[in-house]
Image (tube, rainbow, N blue to C red; front, side, top):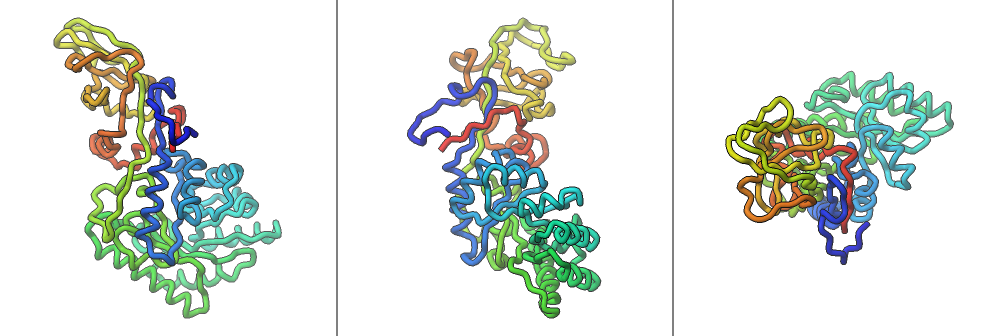
Length: 384
């Protein structure tokens, strides 16, 4: 961790490529989320996929210290990593868990999503065998179409009632997931919420209650405060990014991007007219061209689809990639660069002056994918 009084230049603290994770921005974002979330609703911070590429353990500590109640993950290995790193807060595994990992769920106290009776029975059997218990969250499918008990079928209520009586299982939570809360299709979102609440009402009529009911994702938190219930699950907005296309929040929220991605100039040279650059000779110089080679490639997460056209930034100037992006490096056309450019200069992939959303738009994808795709070999530097 770099002391918060230290002024740093990225080129002095990494050798080829790094992402800077601004922990002060992360603190700001979780506090903002706490501010706009209903006071009686817990905040579960989503740190799956290595906290969307930001570093699960490092971000988890900050989030738990600044307003988050617990953490959501996607795999048992993610949960075990956090537990072995010293995280003691509630962990909820949002997806499916193979029966071979049920013992780990009980041993490491990981809440599991349950969405079929067979899995629940096997988890109950494992809990009884080990003499332990497992907190479960019943998943209702209200319109996402992935996992969950069909929220509109009466038979689902019968199955859930059976599960809630199984030994070794504590029916702690019930949840669902919005499909289009980040779009203007509010009718669909409200219909999902109504299905969710109807299922809960039917279960309560049978005497089955849950400590935590939760359905809101990042967009739901910002746009539907009346649906916050007992708990919300904050994901993308923790990291200072907005769900693409999301309508204006009901309550204004000030988010700060947490991640910036840098590389270095490895080499500078001139090539003559007619010379080619990179594999397949996809770029042929039409004039004497100054080429800079940059220490980042598709093995680091810079998609090969950025070849021949997408621009990276050097000293505030945008320079186009020429030729194919290689596994470990790419080349830029610096012929029209104003000023001096030299080996060791910093290249910005995204960061100040260039949001990750620009990369997503160029590829026709979402900003989630851009941060998640930053490779493991890219150094993570945490600043505060």
